Image (cartoon, rainbow, N blue to C red):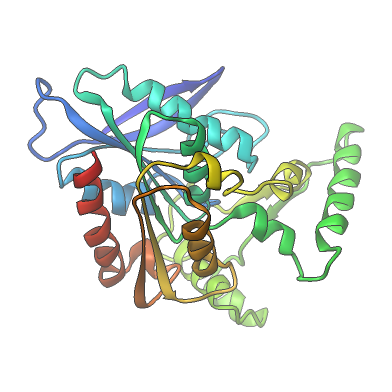
Length: 307
């Protein structure tokens, strides 16, 4: 593995370049851009699990930290803006096509959770991506709009964002939200029972998946663009690349199960498939060997065929 950076305008985007075990710089390899979940980082599931596994199958895999997050540059920190996130993907391809050992005609993309939604958005206007894979993909805009499931929850949130942004423009301290409890024990003390919230806390706040940059923090004043975002907007018209969707068969409140079926229905792709991994949840697909292996058993032949 090599630690590299590439540019998104004036930002340095930090990435890990996972290379095949028998890497030969004189050869040209297919490549995959691998994108992390919301609040995650390249050392976790996008690179540490899927990136390593795909590199072991002969792919060059670029797992990157989103701008304003992780080890990447960008101030202020902890921005989750879909427009910025999607541009990272295009710049990742710009970097890959400069490498002599990457075949520019065989570049694919993989995204996990919110990174899966962004991967879909990016692929619709980035034709250098020849194949699209998602694992537990979440349409982040849909999730943000649902809020407390009342009709005006998104409007109330946008009003609060507006007030916070005005306050910060006048000198107030930024509001940075910890999206998850500090520990699984704290989640239990708070009475949190939702499957995805409980398992997210176990993943991000325990040795199961904890990494210094996988902090799940959010700058509230900059959350507005996500509320107006639809990861699958225009998929019926613009998403034509081969598509492999993987979801867990145990649905949780973040909605990746239903988003997977929504994406399958909406995608224009002539070659598209959805794998439901039975008995496994959204977060099982981040780390649990019996879940991730089933996902890889679908993704590897998919990329082998189309890249």
